[in-house]
Length: 582
Image (tube, rainbow, N blue to C red; front, side):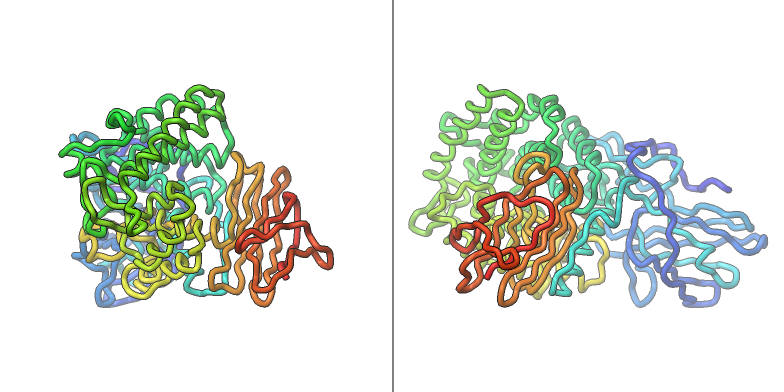
């Protein structure tokens, strides 16, 4: 079999053991002119082509690859970083591999502006994201068995590892878009920012990590990404604390204290401690307020945020990271450091509240020297548990009423805060909201991988293959199905469904101990069927339906106490259980 003609010596292997090529047949082949064919593979994937001509007759062909169509043809000049490429190939009866030349922007190894790109194995040849292929000069008909896309995915990926279905067709479409987005962007062996640079960024990686745990059983790719980023960190202020978030998420997923202990000391450099002033708050100099303090991305998604030398969002990230360091330090026996971090957090939280909270409006200002109040100055403190209990309802209602005035990145934290604070119906509604600032808009656009931004108008150079836009891949299992790890390694889970406006939801959540199966129905009563793997128990909190008097298993009343809008079971559940609130 002939070697691919456009392989490039710069394409050294990155993480080849964790990825592989999967051969895929097209879903449709259309003749659009004599000798010109349009091939549709159904969804975008990172890969290249294998062609098998039926005749020995030599022929020169032109092959176009694309993510977008215009008037039934592959878009030759798509917007922003949407992918299009063309190459020539010579066919003469033998199978050949076809791909364009390597792109300098996502294979660059030496740059003063960013870390090196992640390179795919040289034996693959060049891979790029595409759904459609247009071939000019092909002799005769093209049968499906004559063209194959070699798509790159994680070697460990299991399409059956996770599932989600509910009573809302649009929510189901959003789940599948986001689930597939996590899968399709595993091509590099670590979590990268999409195709434009193919570089891991801390915030991107953390959001990707959350979705990865909810959609597949593998745990190695998050670890490899973490270790890579500890060596090749990027520039935004809030991206550094995301490394603490990643370590904490890995510990909660696996319970592996040996892994955590070997990385704990290095994490201290990610807390922004070098910028802390005498009162415990993180300070920002002019360079940091001009560029380093990112708040949200792209810039126009910041809801008019006013940057000051004491930034509410940056300090919220700092405090959350310090809190997590205290928890992790205690878990690995660093009791003194854990106590010091806990004391630092307690003291600084008081200063945070004093300097940033406006008691007249009941909201957080963007900084200590501005009166401006933005979505971001409130969503991050709410998501990170920094808001005193007496203020949570007001802030969560205010955020729900403001809508999606943040990017697809900020949406992860906005919706987490809403789900955690009694606004789950509003959170789900934001996913499916009309207009161009929701995941429903992505679905209706026809994309098969989530975008880097809500729409092209909000980021003109956006990638159409960016997993940081796939937050529902983790939010729907964690909050609608309601399944999360309560203790490290899933020894105990939290099962806390949020029906929102749905009448039913069912799904499968992968964990290191095995899959958790959930099926709930919400009409006159709330009924839950739950199957837990061996070695796992669950704290179960069920919605208290109108006029409900308790929780039952068949005709037997189950010991439970009502707290606000929840019935909380007195004893942990295990194995298979069926419960009804009535």
